[in-house]
Length: 463
Figure 1 (tube, rainbow, N blue to C red):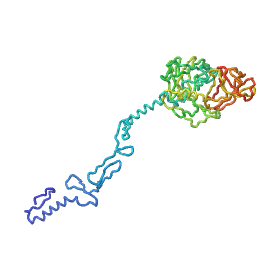
Figure 2: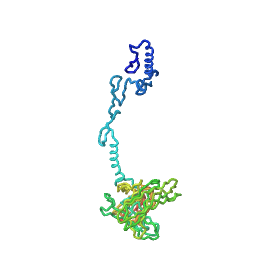
Figure 3: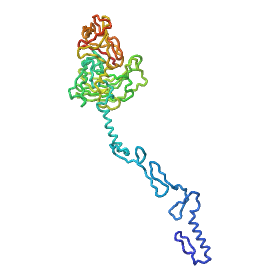
Figure 4: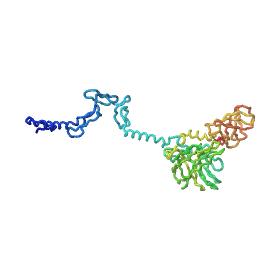
């Protein structure tokens, strides 16, 4: 037995082998076949043979986990499929009515409804939106962010020059004088020369000037505005900003207090930190971010006059002059571009009139229609231009009795024998008594008049 098989190398008997050699030859041959095919034995139903190594005839039985593919069924968004032959599978194009494959695009201007935006396109769109969105919070036309009323000092219902402590404590609308001693100061309306306002493109008309005329025992000297309700900004970061200049290098101080009102048993005022700024003879914008304390656990007074006080002090030095414009208080930690509370002249006036309204003539004129009341007075009703914060309980007036008068139904005019006096009011109306000596029938209609331009009537609902 000398001839091996070509594929497996099994030793096969040859035709010339002796008969006596055949049993042994077939034993060798059979053992070789048995050894070579041993791996084909075994397995269980469903298993298949798999090559174990690269060695010839080295197999192992494994589970048929590859499966037998007998057909391919395609559902949307796949297309094609089949059970025989060359099977082709694809994917349909996506549209607004079906799912599928989409093409990516970097474009931010396409009107296609079948393209998908890449992160590059989304970023470009975001940048465009951000650049358009940001000016709404930084330009001069975003109203509502500033909680200071009359921040550009455009409204001066009470007049244009004030001396404190004599006379009214309020000056430009919504601004009160801060002075804690016997000193005096002058607050006046100053007009900008055209083109010199602090913000280019915002040609404000006026600014406020505060000048210390006598120090006396005062330790602070300045102005404040009271933002209605101590709830305003409570527990938040706010940013206060303003433009200021002085007659020479001066220190200006900013402080914010939380006042819980009067009446009853309100919590004590929370006095804020004092922040100082170095003003020069040139307009400079100053800003300060402040964390207002929470009001949790606090008690309000019963007179509905709680407020957040914004205080700006002048240097308490004789003749020290502080000019202010563009006062702003807003939420957040950034001083954005200045804007008044409403963004309009009429809107700002209406906000001011919520707290104070003065009826005064530009010339002699009729101011209200009243009714004769016996022989001593005419009672006139005034419709207030806006609903005031609270019901006014007093009347302000100027001049003497001869600055006021009436005209009866027959056209005869009379001068009052005393200045008008308060009768009563609501938040929307006020009734005033015009006293005089003529006999007017009870209930007869008459005109009440300001005879001179020195006359005025005013109602206050200030905090």
